[in-house]
Image (cartoon, rainbow over all chains, first blue to last red; front, side, top):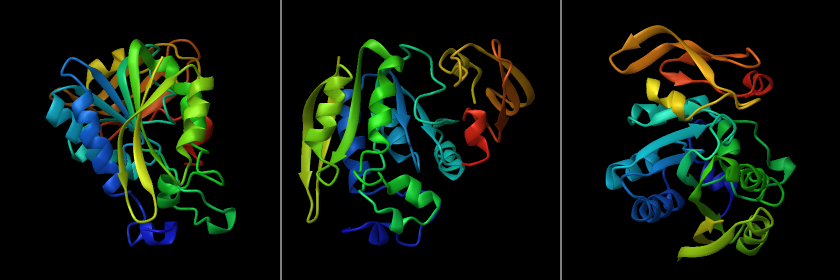
Length: 191
Length: 62
């Protein structure tokens, strides 16, 4: 799990659940109540959305840019919308928004132009998708809503917390896990 | 998609309400149909139960 090429493996259409997915799914299931309306952005296989819905009893809607991911999530019984981040969701709609973003820093020379790159690559900084997400997510959050965002040490947790702060969020780390080449953190963002 | 999703989704361009047209339904699930923005008139397809709410300029590229 050191770089994109290794992560990529043989799967080229839909990112399959890995350590990051399990960590977000576990923490989110503890944070979400059965009366909450939840959005998972970039659901991929649909694993996190399905796990959270099953464990918490909450209604979980999922979105993804990738049509293969949308089909995969729907096959798991998840309500799925093909979307760019949060753009087709109503103002103040969600009690919680979950996101395991594409976060690996990538050179342009590493581009492969397939769905797995879209699922993994966070551009040069690793934050090419996280930053626009942070700018947009506040609109769809209910007044006391929260964001649960998975961030890797490769992406820079401090930088993500700073950007979140400029968008009016305070951040708390709910869980950290260390792996040989990165540590993963689930951030809870509140306004 | 379920009809109750209409309370959660909106036009990705102007955030206005969407009007549902159903072509094929299976129980609660709408399998085929379309969603049309009540403000700008842009139409979004529902295919295999999944609404495609990408903005029109991303539909081809993605």
